Image 1 (cartoon, one colour):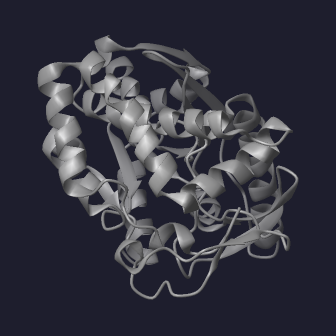
Image 2: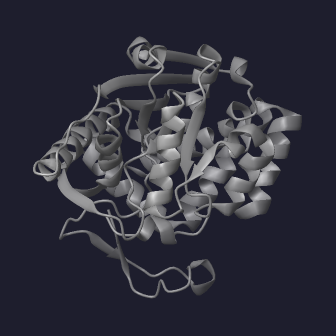
Length: 323
């Protein structure tokens, strides 16, 4: 996986995000959901790079050539979860039918006062994890996010939930600062949530088999878990249509042990096991895959045209491959 995901321009921009927030807040979720159809059509027609990425992923996940309808459904699912962020982050959880699996296993280390790392991905809605705050109001939840990646979305989230924004650990900081912030939080028994399917530019990755190809996954999250000897729980918040979400929690480790002499082998094993778990869930809920960029290192990845200058971030002058 290249740094392509960091270079993609924001979809919709500041005005579109705040407009849908206003419609959602004042017109209600039903009215706002009606707007998702023209939004889906816009992205289907105007964003060929994301459309191509969707097609290549769905080809793998569905085991057949993806149709235009499949791609539209994929984009609509993504748009639905973006809209629902307005309500989830505003604390309006009663609007949703959210079902959980495996939550008791996550509670065990927290009940002992031990901090836990909650590893998520861009599969489904990580915001649906807000339900944890209602089930364990005594547990402090910290989220590791890169504040500068989507500034318009970040500004929106700051306005919707200032308390959550204040508890964000900025992934854009240098590595030692992020590690120290995570350690301080988990020493206090906090649940620290972070997404582990994308690597920050310049950070180490490992190539592993994934959905019939080879993809690069970051190793830093697993190194943090090993250094701090923390329990790791995998989590997915899958959108199931309408107002339904399914939260799935799987304890990955009660505490990684990696001495200096075997650290590389332990990290490699963790990344491979994680890729297997992510592939399993992605095949079960393919339209929840929200990595709309080059993800695989396949030699036969198709080259697509360069975006128009107005829609292209600075420095993105070469043709790019889309997975």
